[in-house]
Image (tube, rainbow, N blue to C red; front, top):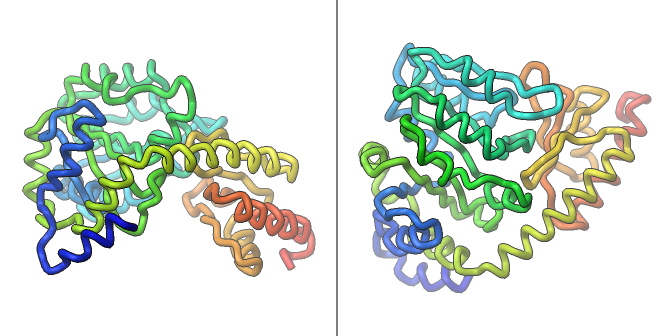
Length: 324
């Protein structure tokens, strides 16, 4: 807040279109060249730009199902076809299925790891397999919006190091919206395989897509390691606690490396969600075919999580009586 207040005093001035200070700090933190970084008004801004740069009518995108909605919506908006490969029965990413779905018309292979909404993540061997198998005509969009939460697992892979061997172009997307608690400021970034890809992206982005206060907030958040550690510690403990409580309620969630849980319910999730609203609890019911009995709930502060669990317990108990 102090950094944002200072930046707001210069509100009459345009933002730094190059995000210079944030670019330098991230390049040092990630040990990558500054020109391999691109910035967006949240990582979803970069998703939109990527589809505008690389997709046209008749092109194809390979992703997973269930998927983060914008991975498919943005592709469809450009007239591209989407092949969505379902997760496995235990909630894992079907990497071999996605690789098998690639055709000569595939321009983007785009999915999240940890996956949104389920929470599964690829292991090191799988990323190596992905890097080796991708054809040169397909851009890998590896969406790591939940990267920091994934790193809570001791064996979470270093995707940047593992993707270096790929002959195909790639971009790893990350954000300040999740673990850094800056969703309202809209700062996302991407690390590209080589600077030429960044140049293509910059041609289609608006020059002032990250505001002056947002850049200041992200720079301050990047330096505030104590806050990040407190946030991650809370999620690690609460994700386990909430997962165990859900299992006790008879609705065990899928394994998750994110700051959320994906829960299969005995009745349609839309009805459960509507009933939870009456308790002042908002969750996300999933609407993709095959997953309409699932909802995703974000892990919050302990009191918020308790409110959700109490409400869900009451709703499930009333489900036999029409969710009354």
